[in-house]
Length: 309
Image (cartoon, rainbow, N blue to C red; front, side, top):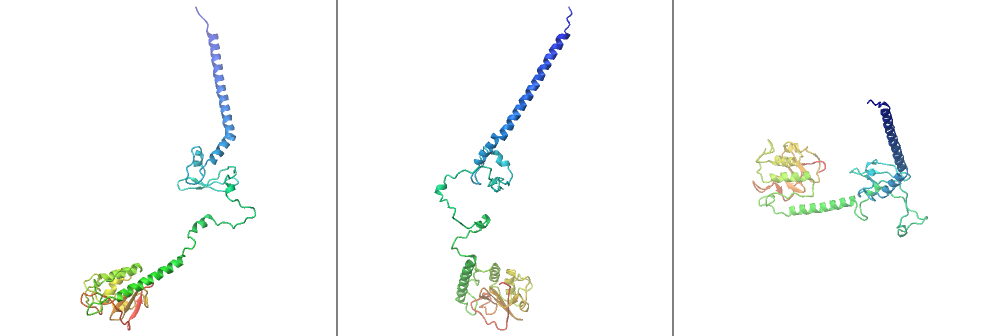
């Protein structure tokens, strides 16, 4: 038996085609409705949510942002607030500091206890925050100039006391050399250069005197007068090569110095460092100290000093 199924297949194909089109139209309609709902939320309820999130933002820069406001992290580093004129600045960790969102201001619940000023009250304008931050000196504290003067007075007293102590030293019998280890203390209240010169002079204070010693090289086992002075000055970085007494007549600048004064002529040289005499003449023995307890007559010598010292 032969059955013609052409008409039945055509009908079944038509019915299936209608179902597919209906499904497609239904999906399109549902998508349109969803898009419309999103647009309505963004224009209405979304704005309210943003304002609420901004109102819940931390009150100070160090506080963490609440979980309900993730959009704050992606905001620009500097924004102009609507109506307020405030700007936000990016902190060191990328956080935005000082943000002012578009939030309506509400009444201050503590206003009544804050002594609100009447309209007639007037006050001078404040300085800029950066300027105000510089005002860190407490009222009544001494100024920098006053502190410097006090330090200078204290150093002068200490200097005079140290000089007097050296002058009270008893010399070794037979000359003016100081006793003990033959060295003097390195004071803390003088420039570093002066401390280095004293330390250098101490290093060879008890070395023997040999004419010409210390001139072939700073490293020697005996030093004459100019070799001794040259070694000490080199320790302070004030001399590059050993100089003779005649050459030291033109060392540095003319006149006595505050801390170091070299006296020189064609045949002899010595110096005063922080008031103490350093000289090979007048020593008390072969291994006696070049530091001496009393001053000498400076007549016939040229006085030289290093500028600033």
